[in-house]
Length: 206
Image (cartoon, rainbow, N blue to C red; front, side):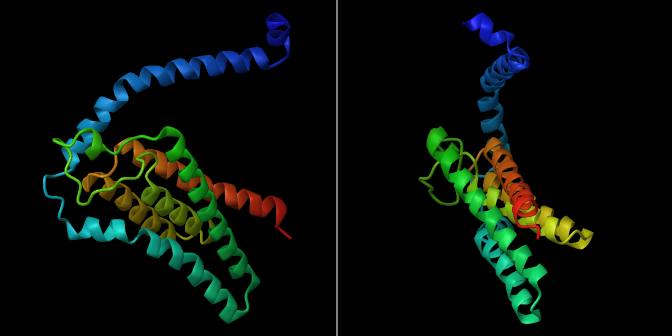
């Protein structure tokens, strides 16, 4: 039965690719934790009191809500259906991001760095939630990617991604996430925005 299964066109290559990917993932996992905590210790000070990074971190959900609401408000004021549609897509990206982030956190159940290394990491406040992916980072990158897809101007794209990157860095600086949490959050955020954009063009283009 197994031989017949592997003779199906394409399945043998797929099986081989998945096996290689799994081996690579296991190999990377042997070194990832040490790299993660070393990076946190290098970035996170004993007293993470930077007002800039605290404000940047706190701005995520304000900006994440204000961006689509602002676009929708402009669309309503100008009676512009294109702007309204842009705002709906941005909301869609945020909803996808929240769903994926929540599911991933519950599946992996990774402890935050300060919980695992209480003598090495100094969080600016105590968080009890799961660590990977970083929810603040995923929301920031979902917002940045959505704005960049809807308004393809350098003066929108560059500041949006610089802000999102600052959010990600701030989460490490503040001692509440590993770098891999931030990388995963960025991937979820950007992926959610592009998925929402694809769904919009696929099913609601007209």
